[in-house]
Image (tube, rainbow, N blue to C red; front, side):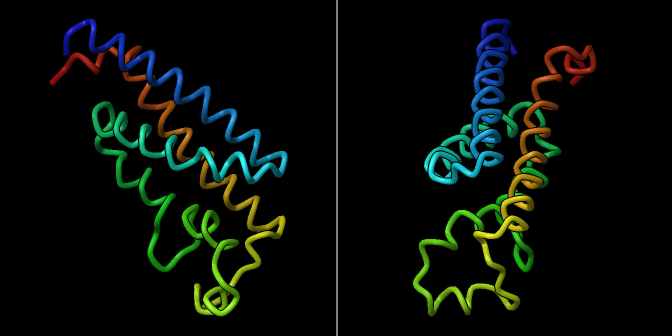
Length: 132
């Protein structure tokens, strides 16, 4: 990678981490509207950066968003917009996605994604990054 590319990616990582911390604050303070409004953009941009910087962690990152057969951020994000009839069919063991337990679980999953993004940023500070 050229130096200008490295600086560009490092700046983008800083911006995404800062935005992720803001989203975490929104979740922790029960401001679901801000989280649900901004999460998809943050996720897409973070995913693109992780593919470049830390490709071995991409499946872990994606798995927090959409994990078949398990609770995930995607379910938390869309559950409250489903019609009542679909909510009952949404999962084998429907969870009240407005409960404290569901919010805590979403926070845990999002914290994992943010940690993966922070690990990707640390690649810039690690001499092993230069080894291909």
